[in-house]
Length: 441
Image 1 (cartoon, rainbow, N blue to C red):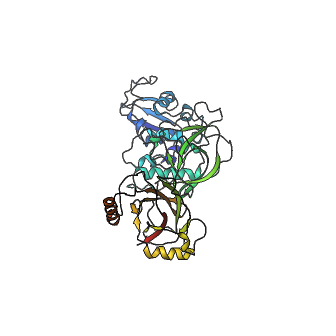
Image 2 (image 1 turned 45 degrees about the horizontal axis):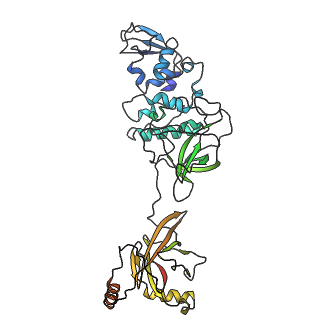
Image 3 (image 1 turned 90 degrees about the horizontal axis):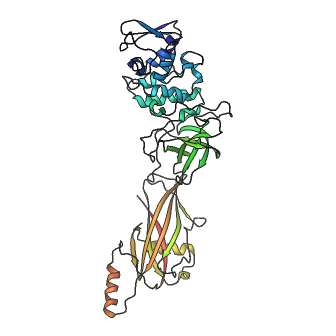
């Protein structure tokens, strides 16, 4: 359709809501309020033809695109130089062209994308029923195949939550409402191509870490100057957050505004999915790593005197392999008088396995005159699932009265595995050794 308009000698536009005596020089007249200027498909009717003749509702000619260029520019936001063909359409940035469409309406939601194909010189199938968002995303993917203009990423949504995750592409041209003046740098440096992949948009961006914004928040400068100054060598930037699990996966955050960056960080190749998939802790992992992170106690006499890993393991951390759909971590506690009686690491595990009764992580159990609380925080690092083990120990006061001794022995025998009693200040007796185990279903 765009090509059809572009090759026409003249196009005639009938304005059903504009009278013949309209003041064509006045901003605020019926001409500036015409419904024709608010429809999506009429954008190409205005831009493509070399000559456009406008007629009132009485079929009286009120002017041409050239003679009405000032009022039309104020009404539509399109530069006069583009309307009068002193500049070609390709000289307008992607963000600016999106801005023109941002305030226009369509009857069918998909048309908000389809009516812009000619504006961006791209082609794609028109699939009514796919929805406006999918159609507009497909349009941007087609644009990226032919343009390296970073202004396609310079959109905002002031109503969105700053913590919400988003892709690099906008879901509607109205997101470019504040981007009319965004332009790309001209030949500042060679831009590396970017493209869609099965992991999202694959793109090379300079990343500047922003620790004050969050532990994994970065500013990614676009190859666009900051309007309206343009000449101060600063870059317009978007906010990105690195997702857990590695694999160079990022998401866009804080889309309510754009940032300004002068000193760019290192160049990284990253991936940004449009539909954000947050790695979950559930599922099957090729390896599970148990790592002791912290041991605390109510008295300084509690300390780590030895650590063991499975006999087949190497190093100070236990790495286990499992293809089970569920892999759980439990713990048990035994009290030993002398660890040296177990000659080898294999002997120790054999003894422990005979008495191992796994308790759930997060349980507080009592052994003798000690309470032990163990928790495991799961973390993802690459393809491995880590369990960071924290142990808290506290002494239980030894009773002195005979009746209290008897009651305490009874309590120690029947006390449930899960104990919500809080910390107490007591003396330590005996020595504790921990045992970690796993259970698979």
